[in-house]
Length: 444
Image (cartoon, rainbow, N blue to C red; front, side, top):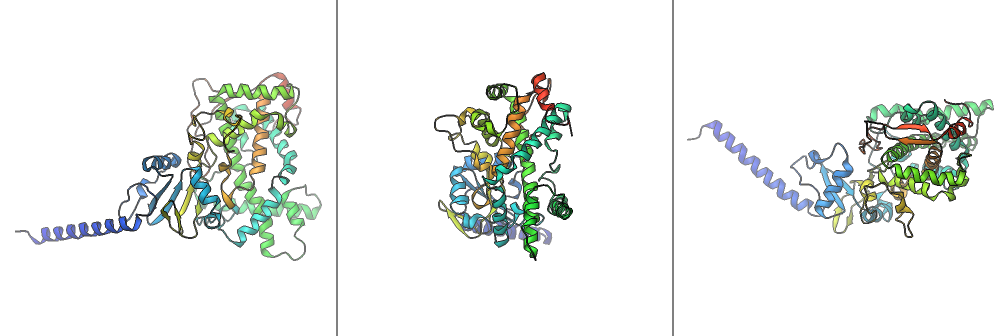
């Protein structure tokens, strides 16, 4: 005979088994139209399947195992959809951008890239486009070149600190830090430049800048929204653009240590144009196709945002028979897209020549996002990164450090950097060092 304790335990077990059976059967019926993904657990779904590091690799594996380029995870009842191919990303984020242009609610980040889709975002986007479209971005070339020349002088005077030099003017924090720590930084990047430039305009000492131009255009009686836009555009440029440029240049340094033959070929092309007697500038761009190919390969080989910035679908949608529920977080796996072996043979190899064939692959624009959420500062970002790369190639050699071989291991987070970046930086010649010194003060 069973005692009461045993009966209670048996009854509880039976109830648990019945509940789990009903939940599992309901889940199978309820989720049968979702894209494939890892097996879900009751209640928590795929919470324990979500990767803490290198998510781009895990999500690609899910696609490979399921045979589907779109995969789904249920995280405590919230839907996450990952796009692992250019085909899926273009179909949903580009062609159906009217329903895929929202963002998940990043409550701590009230700047352009994280704003929800709506009137305020559209107004900010128009203002940003006015100052950073392909044509207007060229106006900032003199300032970009000044920054590059300061970087060169810092590399000359303190080559061991090259990682820190990449960040000079640039925020030291990265997006992977806790949102609460970022909140005062984000606010400061909106408020501080506006206040300083406004004071300089009143004193007649302001230098030309986006902020000065926007404040001057306000006119009389600006609304609160008008003033907010003049703060948000420069803040978004600084916050979203600086860390991404640092990440791209860090990948360039890593690639040069791993692929010295690429460095030599790029330097030979630069030398053929400048004859080693001057620093290259934007007027040389058309004569340096291999350097541009190096930049393309930097953006492809390890995108600065390997999982992009998440979108949010605003209404139920269907892709190839699979339901994507309204409110789902949609993640473009840019890393997987850029390493598709069909589009990019030998995808793990840093190989600029792939961009110089008769029918090259599509430019790595996925590195800058999709649809209505594509990075509006991409023109300036490309030019700024190109200017730094071509001038570093002209003046410095980048070599591995003895007994400390470079490793292609990257941090996880919205913006991704080489986990360890060690290199030996030295001038290519006395002439190259003299060219750097001739740009101004030797170091900052």
